[in-house]
Length: 83
Ligand SMILES: [Zn+2]
Image (cartoon, rainbow, N blue to C red):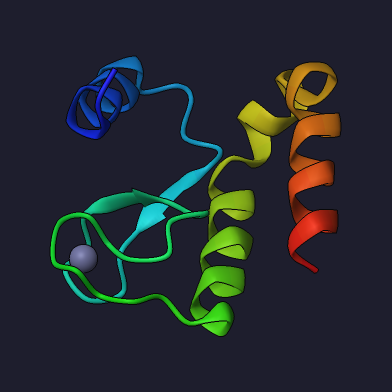
């Protein structure tokens, strides 16, 4: 599966947005663990990445609650790894 297919699947799913947020430059959805935006090539700073993660966390509060069992450990591990 290439990157483009991965993106269309993530968009289509609509519910699995826990790890995606808007690019600070072009505002298209990208994965938080991207180093560069695949749409505009903008290189994310660590600060912007953290900001994006916080925003995603807020937006997904309800889905996080429901998906806590599934995503909790995964998201926690990602945050722990980045911080
Ligand atoms: Zn971008």
